[in-house]
Image (cartoon, rainbow, N blue to C red; front, side, top):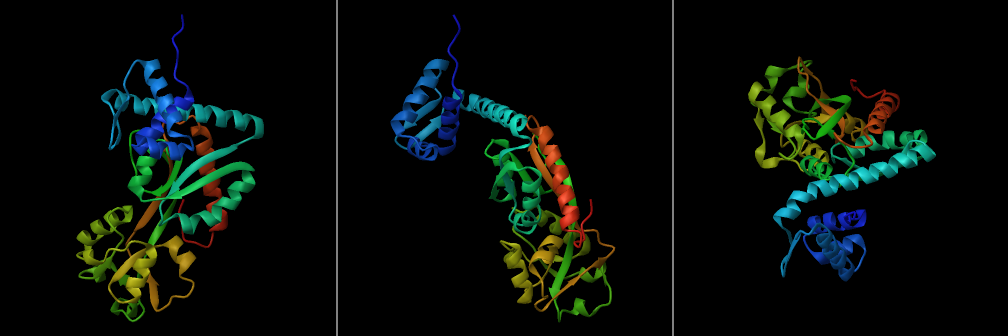
Length: 310
């Protein structure tokens, strides 16, 4: 006699409960009643002959068995989603709904140039875009809450694979009356002793700038770390230091220099590499590679006036 097997719905409920940590929160997230959720979790535990959730007044905590099975549950859900997406692609061509994560320092300055083109290329493609900090994007990708992330390196994990999209220079941005602005050419040794403003440590560019400062004898203005690229620009305008801003941001936001000078530093190759990343075992990985190539093509066409490398 064949054993009963859990349903996809039960696994989704289990994963949602594990992530929400309360029955009430998970039920609201799933748009179902708490008794329905409780009954499905009880049925799942009965089918597996295991206790997955430890109930208490403070919430729901995974048992050791629940922790062991959570990753597998996510993989089964992902495989089923991939199965349905693949069937949809066979019926209607490349498309489907995908959850894409982007860094706040990338999304607003890149997505407007590529999303319309992706929609033209794949009429049935729908992208649910979510901005977050790089570490949170990585965790959401690993745990299946996102299908793809578009993010600058460094970004590496043995469970993830990446496809390089393009390389974007970071340009020195200084007040227009700064001593460096008076130089015909800015050399790397001119940065010695300068106060460099940077984003918070959670951003990948922080570590690039930190290494650069050590190499050139510059100082990171640690008391004035920016929460956004706009914040960095404003602090430079208030003469609190100098900074390096990415080319896409400069192209998108600094139409008039606004008392700023954007300069190249001779013999300094400072850039960030953007990648498209997904789980290495994703059932849609062949389509993701196709999507990465389409994004590269759109960037080359729509951002040809921006100084990007491929």
